[in-house]
Image (tube, rainbow, N blue to C red; front, side, top):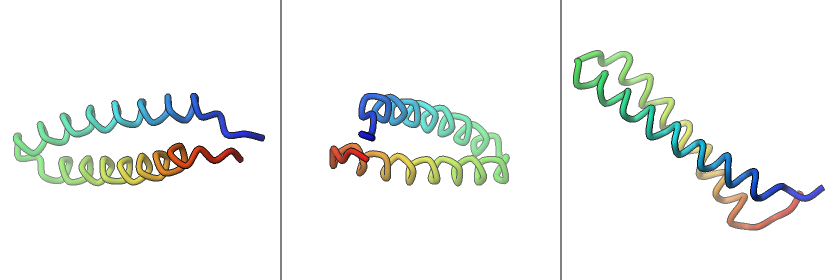
Length: 65
């Protein structure tokens, strides 16, 4: 079965939006000196960035599965 590239592209866009929202919340927490929350949220953002890179690699290759 071929990988649905349009759907994967849509998921990549959704990931980008989530990362942007998380960054804003994490930066707010950091500015409010809530270091524990900021640290955890930045860690989540990094994990999502790693997932986004893997997804981009998959879609850029145009490989069907």
